[in-house]
Length: 335
Image (cartoon, rainbow, N blue to C red; front, side, top):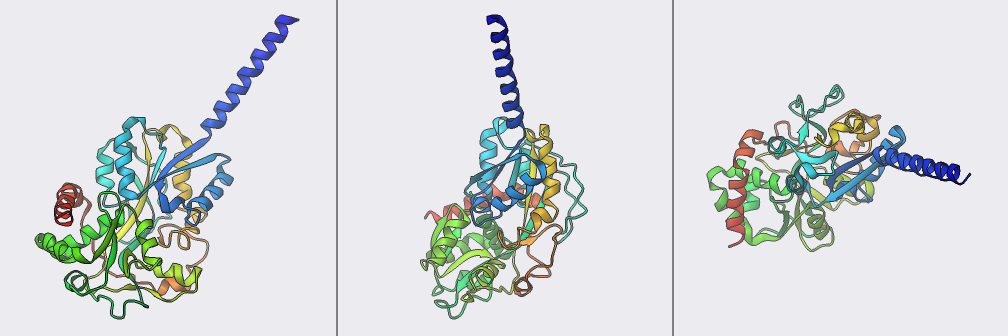
């Protein structure tokens, strides 16, 4: 009897261990940026919706901002715990793919719709927007009407921006300046430098400084005022429309080599293109959805700046020059 009890006990322990391993395997780890996974961001609602569909566990891991995602992935290499990286943008996709740490997604893109179309085999877009200088109408009577006015008006308001080494909006501004000023970009940064209140690692920090009144303007998105109008019924915050146009950002997600062995990864990306995910985006991430939604957007979004021909530098040029352009920026800003 003693021997039978021991065998039964061992069998019970083995079964419990197998169930625990199975439960652990039925999970998905997603690296993303902090604001996506904030309590007010899309993360909690996306997690709830997908877990209801997959009967699995979604684990979001947040870092400061989009460029920091790529930096972390490079640092971890094949040891990464990420099944999916969500929060890169098209300025980083070639560099990300070159790491060899992503695999083709293999999902149906029928629901995907972004300016210029989409056919990438590795990354799937989930939203898009346009960078803008957002200002407080209570402290800024005459906002800049162009990027050149922002840069060259020595008496202009102070602005909070993000670091292009860690932040996709920060990188977006770097590219916006490069697109407008070309070889004179360093001079542009030297002109703007004295009116940069601070450079933060990510978007959340700088936008917090802006809404707390410490900065009169902030680098953000043309859709940022939609948040204040819908969530706060506040009209004081506006996006300045620039005569040169606005730089576009398309945010994407991709499956890592680790995630290629997890069927939930492809399932999540397919889910990401449909209403379960896309319905959440406009009024939590405050961007335009890149997939199918159940209902039309709140009419407030129709009043947000949405250029017909956004500014963009092709991904190949960005990949080839990003380091040199950041070094140029850093040399000016650190003087």
